[in-house]
Length: 286
Ligand code: HEM
Image (tube, rainbow, N blue to C red):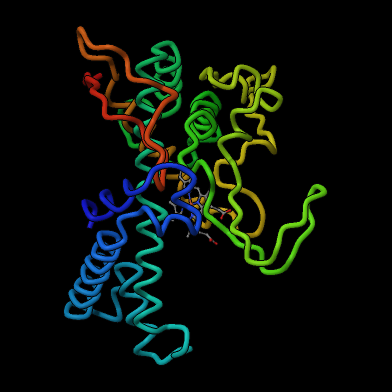
């Protein structure tokens, strides 16, 4: 499933791909073929689950779905079609976003070895080398948390949010927006506006720490968007980012390979998600 997703997420670059003009230049045939492939892989997975299903051992979301349908709860909601939609939503929204955040975080670490060292010192103090990271560790690791917040800000992986449309004619900031207009929220701009963040193109975890070294957040930090439709996976994404990032730095030091230029920490490829250009790093076992 992942290669299909990867190909899908790289189709169409820039803001126009998120508007209804996209139908004139996006490779629609290819897109629909990939969506079909996606559905057929999801269907195979549901089938595989059905064959080994045991109601006393619910292994994951698909098992839970099968259980609920068998029990006949809310048959209009728990339809096969809806479960496909949810699996696909979770894959589309939850895979590329988190993996690109991690890709960007390694770029920032190789470009700022002093930041990487401070994160590793904190990991060594709080977690050590003898066990894996847990979510409870986060509260005692303000510099690591600040570093991750700075990755979310500096490398905004969903630059324009998800397109929405006005359900009725609306007035906003002196403008009249007709019903049915597609609206994109420029999250990247908010996160890189120098009136919100000093030196917005500099990677500075300290901006998230107060004088006592405690994490201080800002209502301008909106990588997951704002409002009732903000990212449904925000909590999960924050957890995944903390656990993966901490585990990588607990075990490895990342460096630019000998003789290579450091990867670009600002420019990237902006399709469905904003990803860095391909780069090499050396992972040196600690
Ligand atoms: C660093 C990781 C992530 C970032 C930066 C991110 C960011 C966003 C943003 C900006 C939106 C658009 C919100 C809006 O429409 O205003 C969104 C929507 C969404 N995200 Fe995430 N996301 C991340 C990870 C995840 C994960 C891990 C999941 C679930 C597994 C997830 C599930 C969703 C869903 C389902 C929506 C659509 C919500 C709706 O339309 O009501 N996201 N995300």
